Image (cartoon, rainbow over all chains, first blue to last red):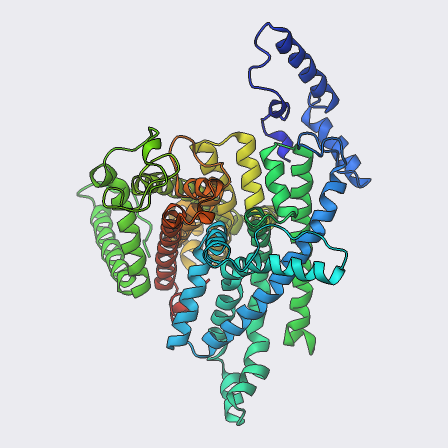
Length: 306
Length: 312
């Protein structure tokens, strides 16, 4: 898709206008550049390049890296795979914590809407949502790695002991996960709050109260099963944001993952790498959405009990 | 809601009708504006936006001319009477950069929002009114742009097209229109079943005419609410682009300031005055537009009122 756009990856390797002079170096550059253009197939029409790309894609070949230092010539998949694992672990942990916290906060503020607690929770989650994640990350680094240096900035050195490794990694990941929570918790807390607000005036809630159930039981058995559905729907958009958040957070906190790789690839105008990253990210989002759809069916009381 | 108006010449019967309608529209608009201002949250939004707009308009009066020359004699200075927010790594006064950054941020925000509104409203109108295959195709396209990871998309797009004000606005608009298209589409779906559309059809109005003269004026208030929310998103996205060094060239935006502070290691040398103020500005302005947007939505859709303002 990005192939259609103008832009020339060979430019990254050569000085702009390097071809113009008449010196030996300029001539050599010109020759090399022309050679590369042929080798990378950049001289072929877009349609033909697209067909080649799709044919390779079906065989699991996403192309080889062309411009990123240290990776040139390596298959894109081998560069991405280990980093994808790191990122999936990070995002997995962060999402579980964020979701749990968001649902707890949303339940409190939705049930007691209009109260002081509700105003505080709503405003602070909305504030967190409006803060750019890179800035939140910088503030966390400033506070907890400079003012009160209790968290490390650099990735931990590997040790022979696996358990220590896991511990070290989690320790290093604390701040990134906190940054993730601050900027994303509103997705879950605000959605649950709003859907609870819509559910609570319903007649079945009056019935539940009339049956003599206490608040806890009303919430657990009657309000939440209906109120959590919109949260599942909202998560469709959340997954798109996760990818964006992770690029920033990994870059700032030096985590060698998929997000940081996106940034490197963009800097180097590394077409095959960028294309593969974008493809995998989009597939990830689509799969996550499919899971959410299935979850919706499972959670919907009307469907489940029918 | 603003009603459709017809061409009218002074003196004719339709002219008085036209005048009557215009007055009605004006009074309704005034009422809506008052309602918006009565809401505490959207009032806060308006105050925030006005504050930044004034800052952008009176930049020269407030902090003098834009600093671009290097002044290495006074780099990385903490806040003082001379430099209220200190100086950056090249000796520029931070306050000066902040104020001038407002101009670019507002321009990008408004321009991207305008472009996104044009695209989103058109897609929403066409998809909603034409229905069938057109709707299917346009809606799938909307869904695609709605769920794609926006940051990598924008980063890649801008870096390939080369960063400039126009490409940044284009890229941001391209990821901002889908929400509007969806909102407008569902509104059109309910509008087109109304009687006045039926009547227009009966007197022989064509599709284009009905969309432009009957549907569009009725969805306009919604477009305004979406426009304000989109400005918020656009400023947010621009900050990310700038942080990754793909901001508009020539002027320092808030995101670029944070980027320079980050690259200069400001947070590890304790220069809080370097990276805190631009972030505060981004957050406040983004929040301001979001609050106003939610406020307008609430006035338009009274069902949301009991949610108490902060609907996501």
